[in-house]
Length: 422
Ligand SMILES: Nc1nc2c(ncn2[C@@H]2O[C@H](COP(=O)(O)OP(=O)(O)OP(=O)(O)O)[C@@H](O)[C@H]2O)c(=O)[nH]1
Image 1 (tube, rainbow, N blue to C red):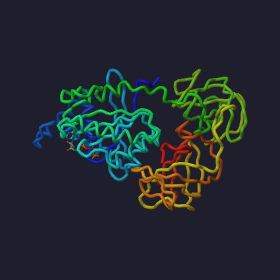
Image 2: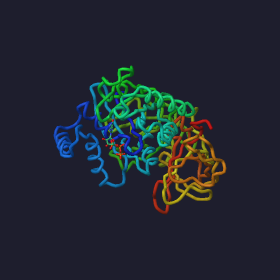
Image 3: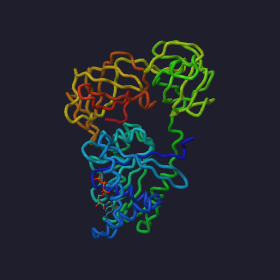
Image 4: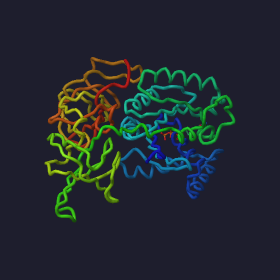
């Protein structure tokens, strides 16, 4: 299973040192290609820099990707003998909410960078809030640039205390702190000799050890149908199957299933994958499921267990992160809503409150939600959606809103219970 793979997202304000940190991780874990390294060293020297400027490495990769324009989150891959890693590198400019939602929604760990000289800023709180809202199971706070505060234990402890107090009001399962210098390499891969007072592990060792397997939902069977494989599309003329990615739960041939919304029940006849049939399938496997009876199922429908079904809701109560700079979220507006593989239309019925992520205060008088803001809202959807709470099941508990006139994703939504206290 994928326990040897860890996905993490980086978050920090501009210039906190994300690029340098990622460069340092790649550099000290020796996953950088020789030719890339030579050119980075050359440019650093030419600029008269003492240290090899590792940000050049990350930023070089970033500008390559920016030619593609549409994606803002770069996924980078590296491996150590203990584990494989995927980093979602999210640049810290104005669209950081969008980037963080995209990058962190599938992350096992959020790395939040704090500049030791600046301490806990509003953006650090915002990142922590978003990470908890997105249900990221582990948060590691990297207090960076420790070299610029004389590797002071007091500075680190003050930041740790302030951040811990804030995080206690959020739903964060696992929070830890590492004092680092990404530039000088302290406590990133190698233990720092400048911070004897710190008895924790360096960042990479910590990332190698974080346990992620239990974070997956293997209990509630949810299979959103991506498309129907019809007989004429398959070499076997009587083949009919339902293709998709398992959102949660374990599926086996012989298991009873119910199709939603029809409510018709049957059993699983077989589960096919690109590598042939399997006896067992679990998330996030892409499979084609064949059923014992021919029942009418279309794209956007869902298979579940007859005794464990998601709720059918047309009135959706959710937290949203607003991502559109050109218009705010206001009652009365209509959007397209995409939930799992299902599309519908939704109208905004109301705003319960907007959250001030700095103080966690709820503004119940709010009449709109603007760019990068977060609020609790009510939507009415044109047909029932089959949902779980986001906390129970991020796949079936989340949705996006799309502005149909521009085709832009304008919000990410999380259904149900709240991650914070007021
Ligand atoms: N002294 C010191 N400087 C650092 C450290 N980490 C990063 N820097 C410097 O801080 C500046 C910003 O670092 P970057 O890695 O580009 O920051 P970033 O967060 O990736 O910024 P964006 O890419 O703009 O989002 C650069 O000049 C780095 O050399 C550190 O640990 N110590």
